[in-house]
Image 1 (tube, helix red, strand yellow):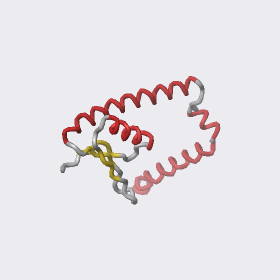
Image 2 (cartoon, rainbow, N blue to C red):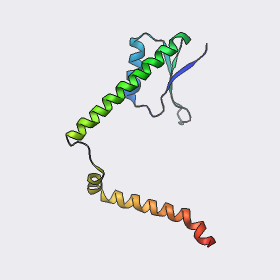
Image 3 (cartoon, rainbow, N blue to C red):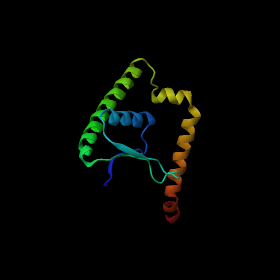
Length: 121
């Protein structure tokens, strides 16, 4: 039996993977899932059992991802209109210490990167 990878589950939110499982079950596509490795070396995945179902499953997945993207963009636009999305400057006013720490880390990184060149000159 040849295995057919449909979706690598690395960085896939649980709600999305649950929706994909439900979509495959709704369309009666036989699949199985492998769990993620406990050390994070390999991610879980959703596999299609039957070779004849692979193209149909990939088409369903592509359509689902387009719909999910449109839904997420609409939700973000609605949140932005309602003022529930913070701008960069609002975040910085709320957490000024975070900005200072980020700028400090960037300065340290640049200094460490340039240190060999400064010593050579």
